[in-house]
Length: 79
Image 1 (spheres, rainbow, N blue to C red):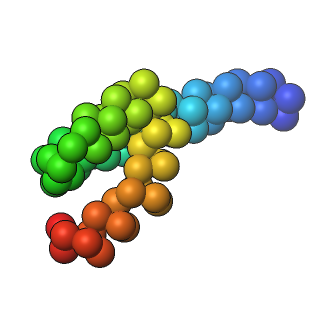
Image 2 (cartoon, rainbow, N blue to C red):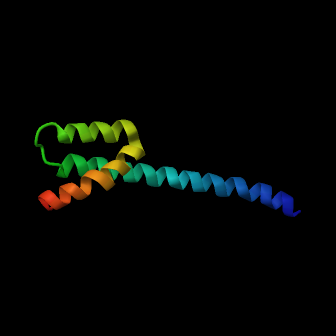
Image 3 (cartoon, rainbow, N blue to C red):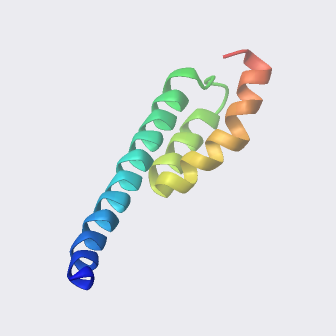
């Protein structure tokens, strides 16, 4: 009885866990893409390069932008 319950519940939990991570990752990616497009200064090709990096590397590129470039931009330009 317990085995049947576990084998029925575990797939649902894993589905919602992975589905939630996927949705949150996509929303974070979209937030970083919009943040870069709207607030990154247009000096040279920096804005274009960051947008391309975020688009083609998806979540990894969004994380790199969030932790590496965004704090520098906020410190330099205040936005």
